Amino acid sequence: MLVILPEIYGLNQHMLDVCQQYATQSWDVLCLSWYKETTSFPQKEEDRAYQCFMSIGFERASEQVVEVLRLQRPLYQHIVVMGFSVGATVAWLLTEYVGLCDGIVGFYGSRIRQYTNITPKVPVLLVYGQSEPAFDLSVLLQTLSNSSQVILKQYPALHGFSNPYSNHYQPNAVRIANEDVHKFLCNITK
Image 1: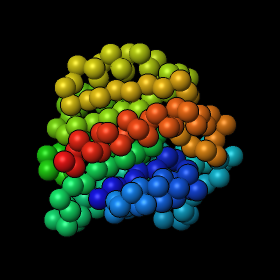
Image 2: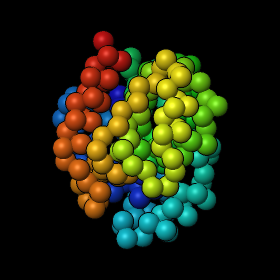
Image 3: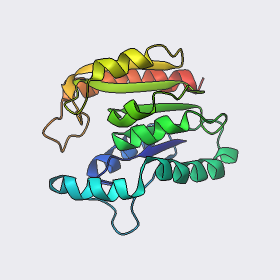
Image 4: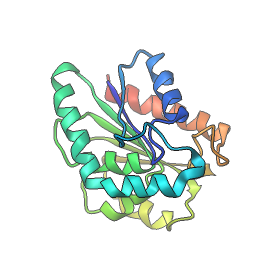
């Protein structure tokens, strides 16, 4: 099973496309929503989406995902969590648990920098563009490179590069990143 954790925008078309992409690869896919009052926010409402997510917060969001994973765990031999932006940070918080999931894929989780004290208990693939305007990516990568469980990948792109509806979309970087994710998933589900 693949559990998708979205960006601040919620279940937008990009997340639905990701779900479809993996469903056609024979994954059972579950995409979680952060919001009860809406399924998604348009990209032009970034500030509103950010405020809505921050009213939930990373810890409470991770608690919600833990509940879902505990219900799904008896049903699946392999569970992988894939998060995007804030979803990647929430997924990172799940790495502290033993037996909850078998691996984590995180796309441009910039707030992971606030949780570098975590020692992952499952394999993690973290995907970043070469430039993150909100923080010094090199510091985060240096800190995380000490963990044997963490694979770090960078691509010639910006935050949000995998979203085809974003101005930062980089199809070549997405193609290479998808190949790396595929290899990672194959190793986890052997």
